[in-house]
Amino acid sequence: MPRPLPALILALLLTATGSIAQGLVISTGPDASDLERLAAAEVQRYLYLRTGEMVSIDDAEGGTGPRIALGIDRGLPEQGYRLHTSGPVGRRSLEIVGGSPVGVLYGAYAFAAELGVEFFLHGDVVPDDRTSLVLPTLDIESSPLFEHRGIQPFHDFPE
Image (tube, rainbow, N blue to C red; front, side, top):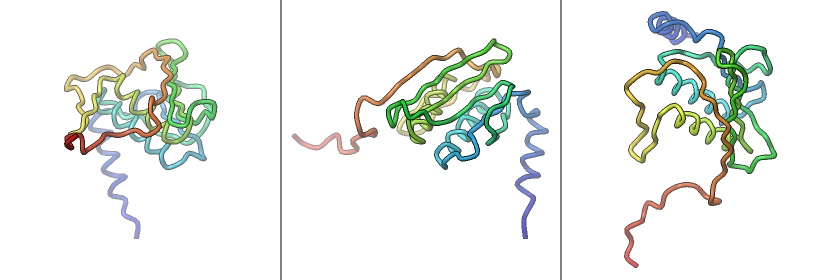
């Protein structure tokens, strides 16, 4: 038996905190992988934490309104990503593309960093002050310097 309680709670939360951000949509495309959908959810989460505005996620491609589009560009390195904004300030759109689904996820976290979020081993740090929902002007392309990302947990071994 389906339980409508989570949908009801979400509807009440949106009503209490303000409506879905006017016009801006996060889009993934209908054939998005699980990592791309995770990246979209992370973009939504960090936008909400920084602005207090809930932006909807849509799996439809295209559209004419302002959007944050996530996708894959096989021309980029596998773990690389590109963040690019276009359009005038009021109708600005952002592209977060990666060379693979992992690259898209790294791009989503790079976008969060552009919003002021910092990432540490003990967790992420989100500034307390809220900012307005305006997409920053970005033209960033990045790829890892090393084949494997991560930290060496045994950094204190004797030489």
